[in-house]
Amino acid sequence: PKPLASTTNDWQQFEVDAWRDAVVAFDDDEDEDFELFLDDLDGDLEETPPPRDDAPRYLREAVEVCGADVALEGLTARERDVLEARYWSEAPRTQLDAANELDVSLTRVNNLERSARKKLERLLEERRSMAQTDADVSDDDGLSDAAQRALAEGRLMLGVMERRVGYFYFRDELGLDEATLGRLLAHHGAVLSQRRDTLAEKGASLRRHLNLDESELKKLIRVQPTLLGHNATQLRRKIEWLRTACDCAHERELGQACLKCPPLLATSARRVLAPAITQLRALDPSGALARRILEQHPNALRARDVGARLK
Image (cartoon, rainbow, N blue to C red):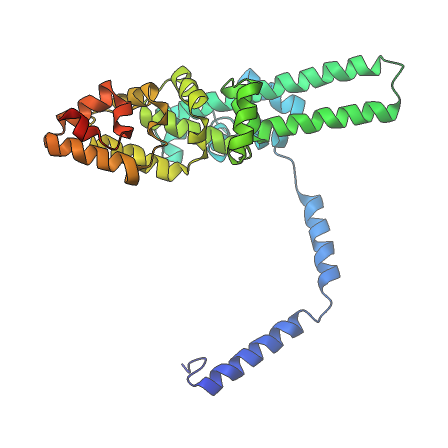
């Protein structure tokens, strides 16, 4: 077949023809028809149906109170996949069935479903609290209809923010007090501005790769909240590199070292950690010394002259 443009002149002519065709395509006054198409499409969209009758009570109540679309909106994509695989299928399905379908481990499915349950139960509590407040406000003859509507809109907006904004993840999930949140906002506001589900995924990744339980993760993030400001992939690669460099046999060893020295993962690997571990490897090529320092005195890895101090 003939090439589109074999010479410079052919290519220039091709560009002119392509531009003319593009202009003609937009000169047919199709904008109005396209808007009507969008309106029709909008009207044809159907709400997500409720789950099966044998779904857990918390899920059925959340869908009944909020609607399926609103209830599932606050979940991560993986959490929605698990719930839909188990409770929106035609026949009952176990966590093992969902794990096989989604190509993840059974433990991962269990953790995702537990996380989704916590979020939906919290959403239910918020909605019931709002309903109770609305009932209290409606009984107050001193408020006008406009004032009542303004209050309801404010509470609705706060509920949306609490489900989406990272600030509330630190406050609700990790239990940071207002003073700590204020300092974090002043010095590391970008961390708080992330989406709540993004922070939750980073926290889950830290917990998994460091083999921490929930209370240990909270302790680590309370002391070093800026960890959640790091790129998740880079943080995972640093964890894997530290494990290899210090000959850690298990994730738990590095996790305990991070609890002893929370700034460890936030320390520059290239400028600080790598030179320190290199010095320890020079003293003991087997790696036993580096591993012992990590286990017993992890903060020493943040010293540039750790090798000289040990000589």
